[in-house]
Length: 140
Image (cartoon, rainbow, N blue to C red; front, side, top):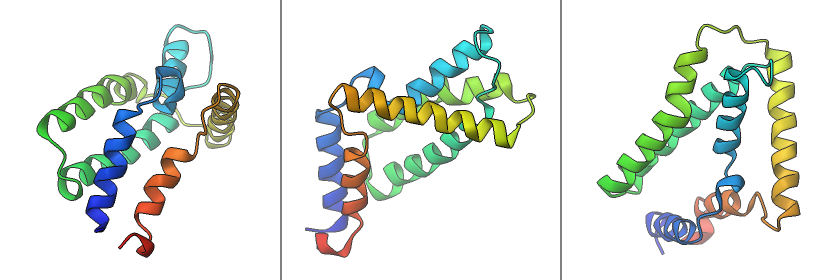
């Protein structure tokens, strides 16, 4: 099995078993953004939004050039990420990044997210491990 076929199979399986809204970390970041905008929290999500955009650029390039995803899938991906990452990042762009504080809050958010996923029976790392395994030479 080729690497591309393995990745496509992994992506198709992931899409068929797409997790609930509360089990996707990007939406937790978006909720943090909303809480920040409406003054429920005082810590800016700017750094985590930047990291999310960087990760999504890599995923976008992989979808376009390596996986050769359909136009519909790519447009859906772009639309969702413009709504939950690009527009929020634009609105908080002038905020300063306090690296120590921001990293601390990203870690706290991720720990809460991981506990939430574990509590509801979803293994947070299953999706990532399937994707990492697709890159190993054993999947030839």
